[in-house]
Length: 241
Image (cartoon, rainbow, N blue to C red; front, top):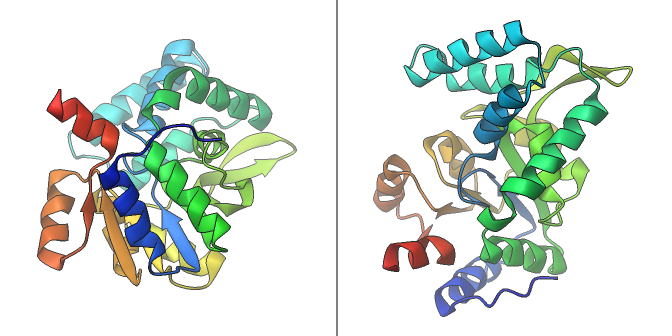
């Protein structure tokens, strides 16, 4: 149960969403439900822990450097952060993801977003998480947001006899987000929440888009489009401090 006391601004934000009585809500995760990029940090954490063989770790670090230089696309990098686990038992990868979240991200969660999700669900809204991060890290985090495992659309591969393969199922980034929503949920959302340019296409298909903790480019677009922008309490408090 949530015990965090929300500010007046946070409470107003939650009510501003609930007033639309939405029946389908979709949430980006990294930067929207919590501060920071759990998928990226888990990737680094795994490599430092020696989860994958040394040759794969060396390749992955070089590949990530190319991504940071703009020589590898967002979609390709997100997919490869999943496929590098090929040959590992999925249950072991999932356990590592849960360990990572428990040790590193619980304090990063935005309490008002947890409250909003609970309030939406209590109002009979269907709530989904849509993320380009690997599905294992999103599953581990969603246990703290009350979003069931079958309501997660994240970067995912086929599993064969409990073992991770390199056969991608989806990478919900950019145009991949509305594509995944339409393929799996079969309708456009009433409300959608995102923080980066990779969420724009998902926000555009929502009846009511909301921008949370935005990167500068999305903040500018939100201002141009007239989309509501919300800064979580913890981030405003840091700025004030």
